Length: 348
Image (cartoon, rainbow, N blue to C red):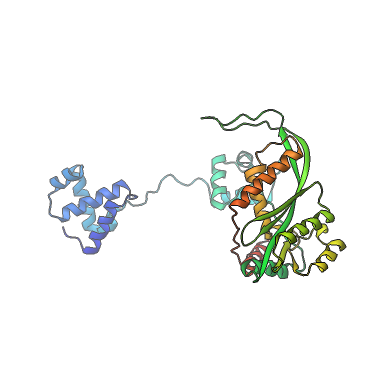
């Protein structure tokens, strides 16, 4: 029995590939050994099979070549769920609701359409339907949305020379929460455990300005977040940034950022340039990404008996951050953001 060079390469790959089925790899070795001139008995002994098995696959290869080594598809059990049944499940999932719930479960829908819950689950999986899940969204209705996106993203992607870009916002009403009972620490085989309830010991507001280039943060904590507190925070930014540099501030459309007092302050500090994110688009402000780090690393699992203790903890954490700051790099261009939004709106 002879094999071509191309067939030998394929057979060798089948016999050595880790993910090849064992049966295919075994048949490929049988054919390769037979092509070397070994007898059926010798091939059977080398591969560890019966002589009849060697004869069978030699004949199959001679008759159909490589295709003869692959199992033919088996019919299996007859199909019991018709296309009409599948359509009924999909239509009921998308257009109907149970009388006693807001969405279908596999058991409830199975009772209605007359099939098993596992069959309903497989149909849902095949068509990507997940009635038990929900998500949130918010589309900006700002008439200047496109211009503001291009302005802010352009500032991120191509910062001006001889200037500092500061992403500024407030994290309001940070609660000093304490658990009602002591936290049980983590041990081998047991995760950290806390009580589900807590007591509130006051709130504080955190003003933060993230330096786009360095990742360092200027911050203040205040009991309120009025325009007067925001103006004092702008004074702190003014003191921290060298006088020869312009300051480009990315902020949202909060009412405290647009009062006459703030407008007057800006006129007295001409090196400050405000760039407003679109309404309902706080995701454009990179300081929100830093707030997420603060929440995940500190606030989610901490406990504080007072606002004073919370403030000290915030100051310590931010001081540690500023020792080795990590800037957040913006990658999406304005065109990419707007194109994706167009596709989303088309789907809606």
